Image 1: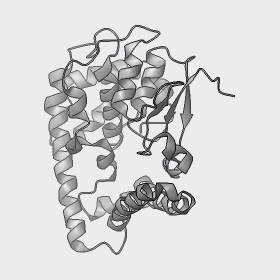
Image 2 (image 1 turned 90 degrees about the vertical axis):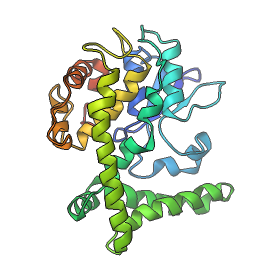
Image 3 (image 1 turned 90 degrees about the horizontal axis):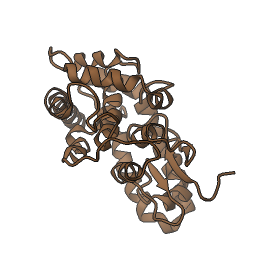
Image 4 (image 1 turned 30 degrees about the horizontal axis):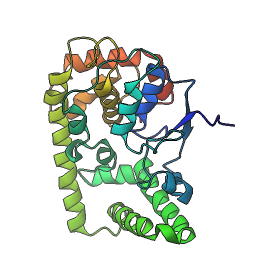
Length: 279
């Protein structure tokens, strides 16, 4: 049984943003204070009415704090965890970096679903992204009739995910496919610029952005890098980040990022969150 005075953090070991506070739980010493529970996004478990009532956006991470409002987005959860941690934490952000890394043009979730050509779309349709989209739609259609009070939520989600289902289907109109390819190409160009310019601009030569210990920016960046690196074929190992080179247009992975990845990959938090691979 979960102790009533314990906080509960909902994550999924296949998602990007829940990994940010999940890393913080161990890095900041919350292991005995927070129960980490899995919600299977691949199966659409976040669309169960019970979970939607905990988080009206049906997203992860979600942090339940006894006697306080639920925290339902990555930024607010990290900000809460870094405020009074059991272990020393690095500094709070103090910049616009957190907002920047969550902007749509470098969205790591879109990067997962993106496809720049027929070959990429076919591979992703046959892999995790295709399964994810189809099973989400099935879950939405399953749960919608069981919760009439949440009709507007389910209607909107069924429509939005239905578009993704169309993109990934054999019946996708050519114009929609071309638009998707163009949007995907632009997204990866933005990711490339972010890696080559924005990230090195905030990273120190060594250590974390937050100083000796990971700070607010670091948890967001570590999770983002892990997802983007995964999409280039990386593993959690200390040299995994070098795979990013394949998306950098011939440029080398910035040394600051190589050093930063090596630092994170040696931590107990990284070993826990990415023990089964990057996500």
